[in-house]
Image (cartoon, rainbow, N blue to C red; front, top):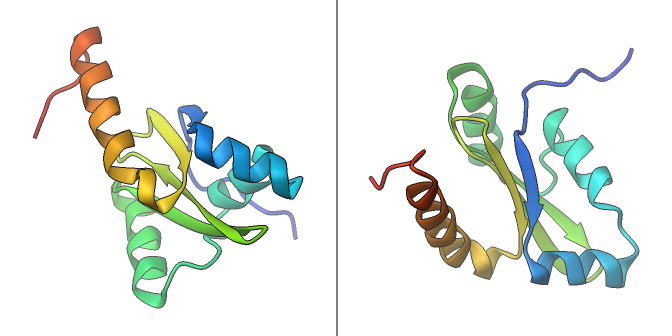
Length: 112
């Protein structure tokens, strides 16, 4: 049975930290992105798996957590499916602030 793409990811970007970790572990970003959009959310806990499954159906944020060498990379697709970010867990707040600032500068987003 072929795997099915569950949702669109929009623009995909990786932070410098995530890109460095993937390069050091010889992991292609496409490998994690494919797993993510096909419903393999890696190390996500049971509650996270449930939330992701609901988010696929209802348009919420989807978060995958993957081992990359000795590090962990998160893959986060925004609820509006316009952007997917690959980042280290500790980079999340910084990435969210940057995304809000960028969307406000483009006139396409809003702060909540």
